Image 1 (tube, rainbow, N blue to C red):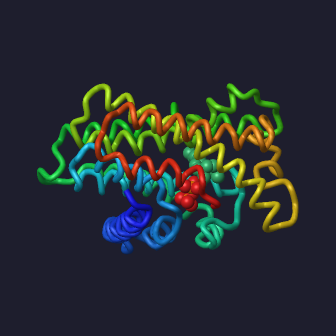
Image 2 (image 1 turned 120 degrees about the horizontal axis):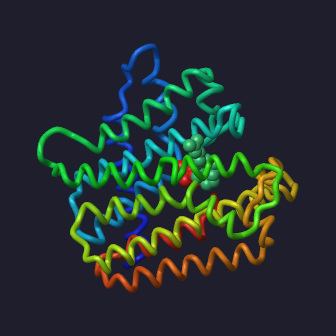
Length: 296
Ligand code: GRG
């Protein structure tokens, strides 16, 4: 598969996701709530999670309507988590995706409500009337997303993260935190895409292993970029997480070992894909490379 084909696929899927989000995130909710929601989710971000859903759907020749809904649902959950994470009670960030954060733009209460409403909207999007998405598939997608975003997944990981500020973490605990906080939603993206088709048990397990390795690789690279981009753009050596005294893969392993670890995880993801025997897994394979080679 040529890289140009992949770049074309990425561009056309990004457009499709943007249009779907445009149509599903309402502008006319009461008292400006919809405006804050749209500000928080439209026109920004790399959309890695939606691309993983859609690539996994292609790999299993799945239900496209269900996959587009799952792609937007996972992005809504991700965007809600960023809005809440940026608030003063958590990371207290003023910029996100190149513009003022939602609480800076609309106030803290509206930011909290926008995140809450986006979380509910994700499950609304997954449960349409009609028979384009069979009821059993709707339930499966809701279950995968809820489990990855809730207490045992993203929210649980965020709780560990906040509790660990200023404390030394060993590699095992750091991995567990990131597996929940970042990895669970990325892995769920792959599995939601897979659930739109009828993979064999072996293919499901292989895609799950791919998502697991990719989710961790994403976080390791995020920690590397936190240091390298900060030193490039600000002329200093510590990034935001290090400034916040948060343990990262770079502080725990060192930069060189973190880079090697990211490459190992990418290889692990690629090996899992090869094991799946899926003929249409080219986009998933190229996405694994893109996640590790990215520069933002
Ligand atoms: C508030 C429940 C709750 C959870 C917040 C996702 C998260 C948990 C916090 C974000 C903090 C952070 C920077 C984590 C590192 C990895 C990460 C999720 C980065 C942001 O995701 P990208 O790079 O962002 O996919 P874009 O903007 O491209 O969508």
